Length: 443
Image 1 (cartoon, rainbow, N blue to C red):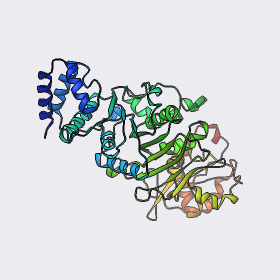
Image 2: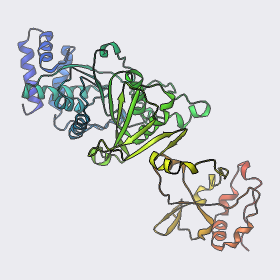
Image 3: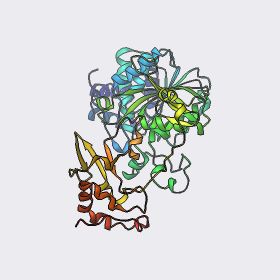
Image 4: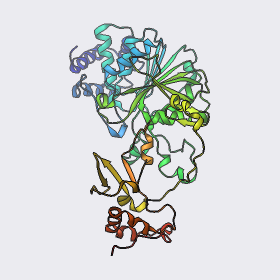
């Protein structure tokens, strides 16, 4: 078959020759493994309409409402090849957000001992797309397909019957859950959201501000670990690096039976046309460890650890190997943390240095003495795995709140720059600044 139209025509002839929809479903189950392929004649008609509308080779969408980033087939093949190289041989595949079904199709091709596939997807067109691809596969190759259970549901409301998996020897939970946050989808009034339940257990103001925002992928992974961590098997998920970092950071608060956590960086710009740091997360199920760290490996050398991050004693560190080299000098800081220095004057006091040129936040060139600026590391930069340098600088006008800023006129360029922007400082309303000396106008 070379087109969906041919597939639609084939099914149309099949239903015409069948005495009932049940007879057609029995035939389709015998070749595809899917029970109740069509739940009604209405579904069959809609599937036929789908086949006439979409091209099976190019069917894809980047539907932000559903958090969609579909995984290309060559990527799912590469991941399944890695699974084989790691000597993982699953008999049950669980795909919690299967989309176009490429992870399932790759699994069918790469793993020989599969007895059951369990897939969940909320978007009906994705279900049709996967079923069409699967029929293409079996009708062209006559390949034997194991039992497949598909659910057109929201993963957040899906009820897994764990008893159905008790006889499995090695479960593989694999997929690419949504790469968006609950706040992003709430803004688009999406229905593809979990119930609002503050699942990280934040208190007070944290529960109603930014800290209660989370990635849907993080919620899904934690949900699946809650259900399946005591089963023998593996979880392998594509997700943002922030999701992996948050998972490792929160692990001591959970009682999951998981171990041997690894990650493989991927080039999301090439694969997904998304400029975001992401990795393939690998987690072994069924055994509990007290080593709350993640080993970074690669597709080329999956048995060699390039870096490890996570908990060392009571410290969460970006590089375990480097930290242990200098652990002896880690201790209490002799300096007090100072907050609110720039606050509502950030546009003046915060500077950026690029190619030996310094700018303020209004992109105006600032030429002041280098001795009066200090390196600045912003909180927003801490989301990265490792920070080696910062191009941010901060002007600090006082070491103490009651210090007279007249001393700054020893730096004429700084003194001139601050006085040029005196109106910004005069507008400060906070009680924090009421007793602070503001520099004098130049005379």
